[in-house]
Image (cartoon, rainbow, N blue to C red):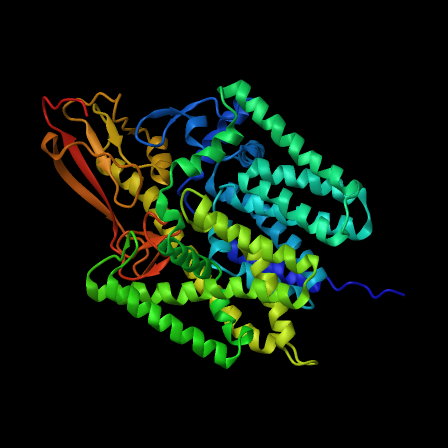
Length: 550
């Protein structure tokens, strides 16, 4: 008689991850959140035309389909949820916990098949900065990962059970992942290779790949009809058109490794359980050499270290630690495949290398969002490695519990720092317009992200550098940490004052001052950085009499 499956570890992990996400349920909308929210509001009124509106995101009025490079399924989900619970931050963040917890459950089921300690694998992968930070946005990344993980589970289950129902479900989930974020298309070659290696021949299972392929062809055709060009191929052309030769450089590889190690910080926390003392000593020695070389040079290729030379050592030290951890993940994936040489280990290897390659060399910028899919294979690889090295009869939890708790604290701190930065936009918009109300003048602003969302909600207008007509007495609000800033010439304005809003003082996810660029390495070579963080400043300038239009 088969033994009943113990689901208590799954529920414990769900409760733990859910409790951490609940800490940030009232977080302000941040970075690209507004793009998904605006598309969702469009969908509520024009469900067949998700991108048929205009938006000022790059400093001038543009069609939404020219701005966004993500498919619309996440916005359809937001539109559905908002029709029930409304548009408040709290309601939408609560609704987005469902995809995050779906990732937990799906990863647990995968780990149950491939590991002896599935809870260890899940915690190693998800108690990480990249998962917690991504889990408290309303962007598409976690929803895509949920579809991705469940597609892998459905496909591997279907092949093992010879179940076409499971494989058809996997095909539908592949399509859903691709329509949530284009990276989901990677499921098609990933699971195709897995099936070929597993089955060693082509079978009727191949037909199920027609489901996502047909859906993607349909999406390309529909968007071509709606917007004059298919958005699938349009997005595919975007990254090559916006990247330079540095994408294939040693510096870019180094920075991608640092992002990988920082985003999956459990690689450092569990290093003592993953590697021998000799390997740890070699890694430490290598990290020291890299740190010295980086701090001495003051730059990594085209990445200049922030601050003065004395501060370079702090940045270089963080880069050395996290890049070494990034290398360790790639080594884990290779070692797991070399030791097992089966379809499962190959899938984990390709999942890891594929995500790393996309984030570092194919995407328009290296960022934490692009590396998010790594958390699943990383957690599984760490658990498999620890189980392999643990003596028979000895629980791996005795050595892993404290490091996991320490990394969880770091991940919460990083998410808190990111949420504090998000809050400066919400609080800054309110403070500025309370102090400088529109009255009989127009209040314009520069900058986008969450700041644009809250400024427009309070009646201010985004400055269009080619179309806006400024009149004497109008105000222009200029944020500090933001994007696409084109302030009016200083000789045409007079500064009335500024308002400072405190962010995280010692840890940041987006800061030119510390080199933190979680959402884009344009801001810096680290996913998050320790250092002295100045307050976010919102400067208020007034248009002088007879000032021409910008």
